[in-house]
Image (tube, rainbow, N blue to C red):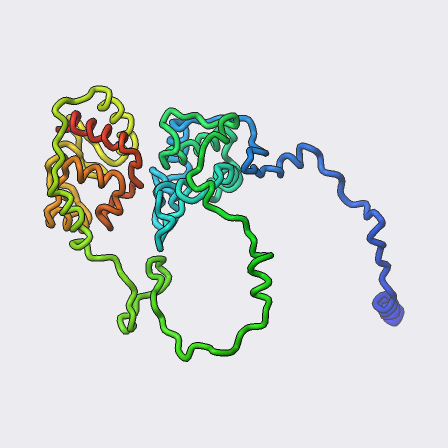
Length: 351
């Protein structure tokens, strides 16, 4: 029996395999159904192709974003720790450390919708409904000051939203321009005799500082130095308006919705994530009793900065730029009308 078994095994191992011709059908599977194809065909093109019918408001998006997105991207889309920032960064693309966000960098709104709908929330992808996706995208572009707070995004008005960096990209011509150059034999003549490090990428947090380097990396100035421009600006105190415009105050109350998650103002207002804004006009920077300020803000106050119309306006426009390394994570208000309105509201409510 064992000899017969070995003969069978040997024959099986040495016999040629019967390989079916590729042109012959294998008889496996079936054609995909239209609804199955539709379930996978989720991509959205810049011209709106693939957008499903639906809509979502900024107001609904704010709640959804807070519930589903803020743990990584922050309540104001400002980013948490190393998670991506989705708002801010306007006019920074020409700097050595640009802030690339949806508002400052992304050329097409369709990319935002497509990515959110297919890949988010993190760890729970493709759980957002169509209307929820529209609402969240509406809140993201609102956080970038691209639409007003009463805006409703839908497949019908989707292409009307203008992205600031829509014309900031060029056609990829590497195949015809660069590839031929890179394909040439490498030049091995007239090489430099020595190579020197001229700069470090510490701004990107990828190169450790070495105190023994001949050319140390450029670091951010100390808080005291960073506060100097703010202190100089504080010397020119803008006069408060003689009369309060009720319409401006009302508009400021609407804008203040971006602030109220962290700041309180009005009767009985107490410190929250940020200090109470009661009496802020005329107050020394970092000077509200009972609130734990960042060292940078305390240094700004010690350097002479006082909150007046000019300094508050500059700070609201670019919190991190005006007082570097302070704790406020808000990206800033880009519209001068919004800044004037919210300042009028704070004065009228909390002075």
